[in-house]
Image 1: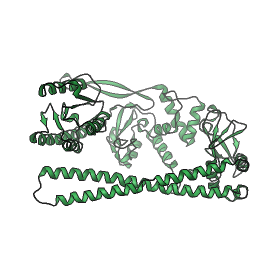
Image 2 (image 1 turned 30 degrees about the vertical axis):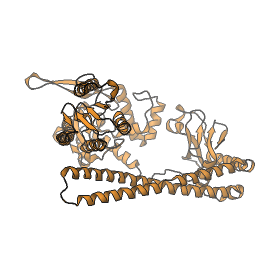
Image 3 (image 1 turned 180 degrees about the horizontal axis):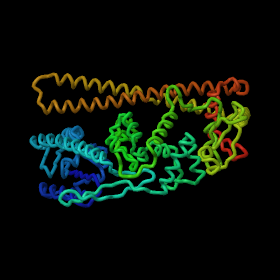
Image 4 (image 1 turned 90 degrees about the vertical axis):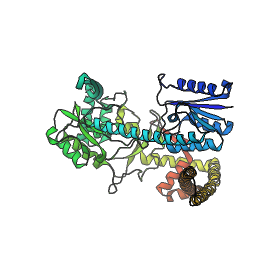
Length: 541
C-alpha cells in the first residue's frame, strides 16, 4: 500500500504541533494500523508558513499532482484543519479522492472516509472549521478597530519621523498590559517639517523633491525621498494636530472620528486606521469615509489649518475630467526614447517657460535632472526641435542605404501573422460551450425526485466548479479578443509604414506626429545622448 502524509503549520516553529511532530504521529498511526508498512511506501508533503485560508500552497498542490500520477491508497493528516478551513476547498479534495478510490484519514479526529460515518462527520467538521476561521477573522478585526479608537499604535512600518515604543500599564488585579505608541525621531521629523513648509510655499511635490535633493536630505533608508513617498507624508494625518480644524475636516469627510471638540488638544497628533483595503491586491487606499480617526499618544507637527490647506492643494493638483492630465505631449518625437549616458535615465521633453521663452520651443532633459537638478545629473540639455530633425535625417538616410530595414518590416509582419494565427479563441469558445452544456445537464439532474442530500451536495459542488471555470474562461476570452484587435491594428500599422518607407523622403512630412513616433519606435531600439553626440541603435542591430 502507498500512503501520502500531509502536514501544515501557519508559522515557523518547533513547538507544539510542529511539522515534524505531525509527520511522526502520522507515521506511528500508519505503522500501528498497517503493520509491515515500509517507510519507502510513505511520501511526505510539508507546507510550513502557510495558512489554511486556501489551497494555494506549493506542497499541497504537488500532492494533488502526485495523487493523479501515483494514486496512493491513503492520504493521512494530523488534523482536519491542516488541509483547509474552507468548505468548498475541502469538499473538492474529498470528491477527488473518492473518485479515485483513495481514503482520507485524519488521526486526531479519527475520521476515515473509507467508512460512511467518517465521511459524513468529516463534512460536518469542515463546516465548523470554516465557521471558526471566519469568526476568528471577524473577531480580530473588531478587536483591532476597538484598540485603534484608543489611539494606540497597532504595529507595522512606522511613518517617517517616528519609531515604535512599548509602554506598560497596570490594570485590575495587578495585571500588566503592554501597548505601543509612536516615539519622535528628531532628525526625520526635521525633514518632515521642511516637506510641509516647502509644499505650502511651492505647491509642487516635484519642487519639494528638488529642494530635498539639493539640500542632501535623505529618508531613513539613505535614499532620496521619492515623489510617492513625499505625497504619502503630506497626506498622512499622523502629523496633523488634533485640533478643531482637523475635527471639522474629517467630520465633513464622513470619517469615523473617535473624539469630540472637548477632547481636542494642541499637544497630540492624529492616528488614522483602516486607510487601506488589505483584502485587495496592492492594498489600495480607501476613501476617507471608511477611515477611523483617533487622537494618538504622540505630538502633532502641523496645525489642523495648515494640514487641511495641504490636502486642498494636493486634491487640486489631481487631474479630473474637467482638467485632464497631459500624459503625452503633442510636439516631441523622441521623448522617453533617449537615454542619458551619465546616469542611465531617460530624457523627456520639457517645454521652455519663463520670461523671454519662445512659444513652441522645448528641450530634452534627463529625468534625474528634472527631478533633482544638477545635484543628481549634470547632463547637458538638447534642443528638442534640433534633436528631432537630426534623428529624422539619419533615418531617411539609413532607409536609403540599408536594405535591412525592409527585412525588419517583413519580420514584423511575419511575427504578427503568427501571433494572430496562434490566438486560441476558438478553443476558449469550445470549452465555454462544453462547460455551459455540463451545467445545464446538472441543473436538469437536480429537478429529479428522490435525490439523496449527499448527491445534491455533490452536484452543487460540481456546478460551482463549472461556474468558476466558465467565469475564468469568459475573462480569458475578453483578454484574447482585446489582444486580437491590438494585433490587427498593429499589422495595419506595419503595412502602412511599409508603404510609407517605399518613398520615405516624400511621405515623411505628410505623416502625423503620432505616425512619425510609431515609425521611429519601430526602427530605433534606443538613442544615447552623451552631452555632445547622439548614438542611435537600430532595432535588430
